[in-house]
Length: 383
Image 1 (cartoon, rainbow, N blue to C red):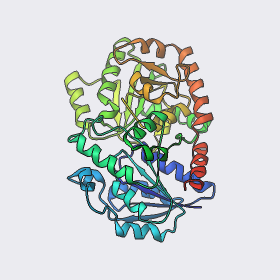
Image 2: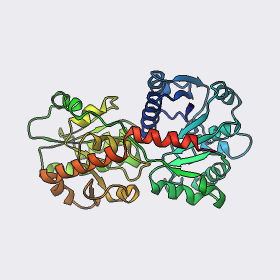
Image 3: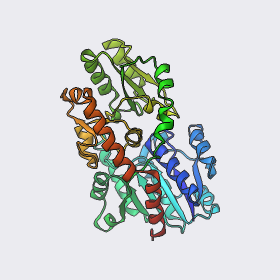
Image 4: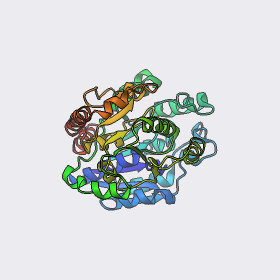
């Protein structure tokens, strides 16, 4: 089977890119012939290089939705089919086109282009919340454009978890709801002995002493991820537990907000941020708790990665309401205004129990091999 992966080319280094690369690599390992198309923009160089290790990479002129001054309004009227892109896709002679996009309004022209080719296609949407929910400007009109174009797409719409599928079905007309599928995400399950071997090295690099506990979050500096809440909770916790250290890995549009918060509240040597690290798994192995402060997600792959490393994970109740798949034995959940989480996290027995249960859940339900098999089954039954 030949599968063409298509990226809407935001170059965000987010979960969508990690998901695409890991899934395509696993499919290739199992004998699927993979091609990858993305924009020629330099921000896609890193992802294109990763795909080139196991796939044929095609790049062409393309403007991502958020490079356009009119955003999704560009897609409101007229023919969206990109002829040059369609010709490049046809030349790959794929059996299936697998499009990956961030949210409802992203890359609607690529869906129209896929429809113009007589090849089965699916589109994975990681964030299915409306523009109104996200607080976007002119959200009513932007949601109207997205709803109109998604309703007309002939392929299969895919998302995860079930909460995301419900919000997606809610915006679609009755006859289109049945073309929404849920495919659980997955991550590569690491060899714990191998990644643990780097624990001492990374902790030394970070200047951590024996007995200090490291809380880590791997995420973009975006409002959705609530980096300022991370700073607030870290500062609050360190007043009671000065041997707790906090690390954020990732950059983004809120970098100046992060720095400004530290200017106002004072620098704390126990709280630091590093830019994106391709080997972030080594930093997870060096950590003691994964602290994910996002308010909403598609399905947070960084969270799955952390749990696959045997880390106990801490999230807030608004995210838990969306995930639904983890219970109190597998993850620590706190309300934003509470400090009860500190007591739970400070208890080594509770940490060990949550870490063990979470690791078992990820290994049994959310491995990359299981996800690849689910997608392969979908490809063979898509039409």
